[in-house]
Length: 220
Image (cartoon, rainbow, N blue to C red; front, top):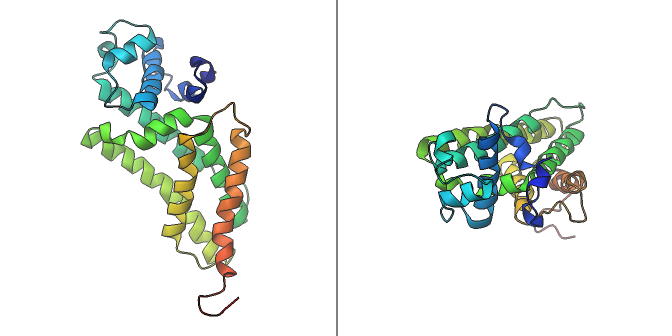
């Protein structure tokens, strides 16, 4: 499993499992080294030799497999975003909007816990991408966000949720969920599934509480 690729607890996750099988062993080692280096030092502070050294390869090895350090970053971030999109795009297991939203959030959060190192790079190192690569990633992010918008709108239409502003609620849910990549560790007290379940309950509270909140000025 990818979790065996680092002895530093905060860098232990399953990110290496995200790399496309079309990459050879050396390229996959470079991606794994790259995601660890970028998560630790940031893209701009990471040198090419940092990546190749961590991968146990010669200084010139990176350019055999990738056009540049930025290309390594792009492949990492693209793999992460494609994986997230696949997870949230799974067909609903239930016709109940509340259960669907909880399942959606639970899966989204569990992904970010299980792959928190790649998730951290995917969230905080986008400034290192070229404009074309950045546009590719933004398109993937928009598709993921659209899944959440539709889940909220469906619940509102079917009166399973309160009259919430889906843009604000989706922004709040996604912000809450992705923030865990800053602090989550697989050796912590909660498994990815446990933290996913907890966040799912919080998300449901955001959309159901709106119908019971007393309007300002009416008293309590």
